[in-house]
Amino acid sequence: MSQAVYVAWRSGAPDGGRWGPVGRLEHGSSGYRFVYTRGAKTVPGFAPFAGMPDLQGVYESDELLPLFANRLLAKSRPEYEAYLRWGGFDPNSPPDPLAILAVTEGRRQTDLLEIFACPAPDASGCYVGKFFLHGVQRVGPESRARIERLAPDEELRLLEEPENPHDRNAVRILTKDNYHVGYVPRYLAYDVGQLAGGRGAEFVKLHVERVNPDAPLQQRLLCRVDACWPAGFQPCSGEEFQPIVGALTPV
Image 1 (tube, rainbow, N blue to C red):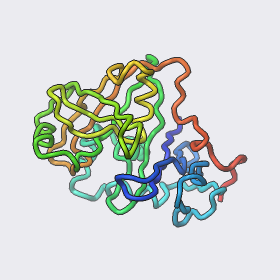
Image 2: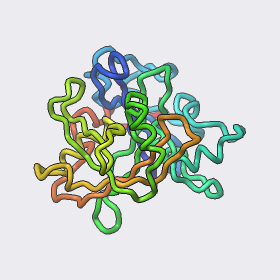
Image 3: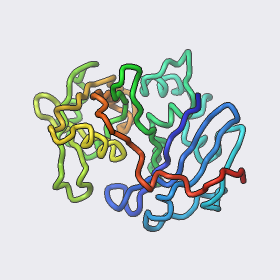
């Protein structure tokens, strides 16, 4: 079975600007393939990535393309096993590189690119996903200290923020004792609202998967989201997610 992730890009500063999907990366039996999606033509200021200049091209390789390979921690690094554990992976059985990118998001301090997987139902027809808490850098010291005291499986609360000036789909994350510890990643926030179905974010359950006190702030808290998969729910189905190319011809 092939793995697939979307590549998103932000126009403007990391805390603002417009965010949108601009590409799709797949890994199957024939190797890796990247195509631009129609969002690449609508996100203001987006330009094709280096080495992949044609928006209508299909880029294939036996190895993970450099743009994405450079967003994985090198296996030679001494913290590599810890890096896998931070994301909830078993270092003795490393997952597909795209699975790692989907959780770590391939984020860097120096650019505006993020990687994410499209949600899919599990075997029982439920929505289950993992993500690293966003916005930890902007919460106060008391909230950061509260993160350190969280325990696996501890329940967290979700609070939708339709009046948020940066993102009307924003979903704040709170502890049960009302510490604001961060936000749902922007690429998942819309889905959380759709899953809630007008019944409030309480319909979607969020728990602590693991706390990583030795990790960088952006990988400090791994969360797990669970919800029923409503009839007709189709994430990543908008026009901006559709490939620009019709017939897929390698470049």
